[in-house]
Image (cartoon, rainbow, N blue to C red; front, top):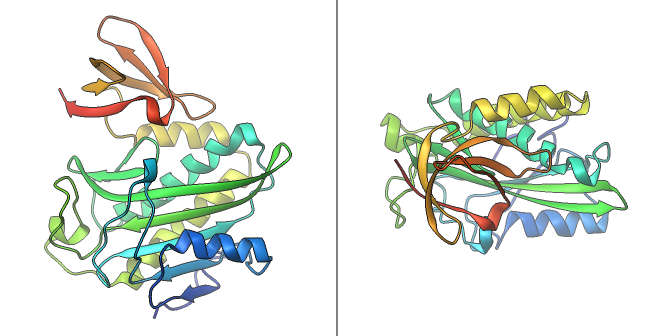
Length: 253
């Protein structure tokens, strides 16, 4: 049972603990649709049966070992064109929170968290729109904390790296504190700083690696576009821009 936080303004002031569920994002969406969810509500479970990841993938998590939860926001101050700013702000908050426990955590565009070239966590943002503005955002997070063995070869946990077992409540509290700080920072329209900070912690930023966009090529990330596109320079000098499903990382060069 996760405790209600005392050191945030609104995020995590209401925590809904579920013994198990198919997806905390699905539960959160149902609550938003019914009008029952306050901003900052967190839905958390130790056992998520069909947690969702990017590209329709499932999120693997051993019951009781990791953090699997969703946060509800109402970022009505953002336009549809600005929605990736929310993505960047939340990612920075999670990265900062995890960095309190182990150094070197990076954000892999757009929503994964990497450590030592392995996946430490993932984030799935599901926005609802009303006209040209965001109406609500459900942000699902899966963070590998104490799990030791994974069926996927590129997964890693805080415990794998540090050798110590962490208190899940402590990790949750710190992550929520940092996420809330970045969300409030976003509300103050500090867009330029958020984008700069996101690029500073971006995995493989300005490093050569092999990618696949239908053909293999060597390139490096040069920035993030205003709408969240990945901006890259190919080894032949060509500058290109990609959306999420248009490119895949193959390996570091």
